[in-house]
Amino acid sequence: MSCPSVYIVVINWNGYEDTSRCLTSLRDLEYPTYRIIVIDNGSDDGSVELLRKNYPNVIILEAKENVGFARGNNIGIRYALNHYAAYVWLLNNDTTVSRTALFELVQVAESDVTIGAVGSVVYYMNCPEKIQVWGGGWVNTWIGRAGHFITPVPSQRLDYVVGASILLRSDALRDVGYLDEDYFMYWEDTDISFRLRKAGWKLAVAPNSKVFHKVSGSIGEGSEAFHFYFNRSAKRFFQRYCVMPWVPISIGVGGRLAKLVVKKNWKAVRAIVRSMFVPSKI
Image (cartoon, rainbow, N blue to C red; front, top):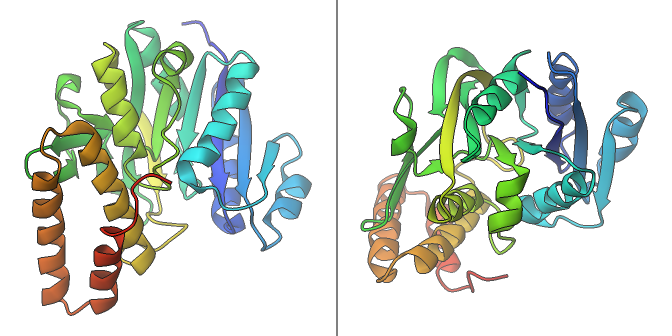
């Protein structure tokens, strides 16, 4: 197999420890032609200085503020395409990777020129035998629900490739556009997957590409920020892809609120309610 050029894009926001662990694992990749770009989202913890000192071969691009996951990744995507990358690998900073993770992704992508995006099998970092995501997942646009596959499924069943580790073909990005920056975080991977599929590109999983995910390294899953941004982005997604968007939005939000009320997590309840009354477009 030929080894086309790949640019790896990692977002950092006040997360030197996680980002450093990720970059150290990337050093050991068994792939000859790749470059690493770190987009720093306005960190104020000294991350940039430490990254420049300890990883001199990594390209570091600084945003002057926290511009979010989608916009931050787009900075890296734009740089990669301007430098003739054949593929762009978007990778969460709170991950580590197996030595062959990139080779396996590219091998699947190169097997079919109509594949626009390839996902890894993502395992829990603290339980490395347990699968968190088998490449991607499903979306039910009638009831406002989505979920990851955790066992092998045919690629035809994928509605999206999970953004924790997604290899994007440059030609596909030029065709459908970059990540939608109105998703500050969450659902941007589902959105671009839907756009790829609509344009005729296929989604796929590389079963031997192993990525280990710490889970919610930048903001805690279950925090007020998580619930606010997750639901705000979900609202935008269903408004874009559903004929009657308030049906899935209402059902989805209602189910999440019910669970939080039972748990008496009133801060999260307030965050979800607040997310419904702010514009879904930045």
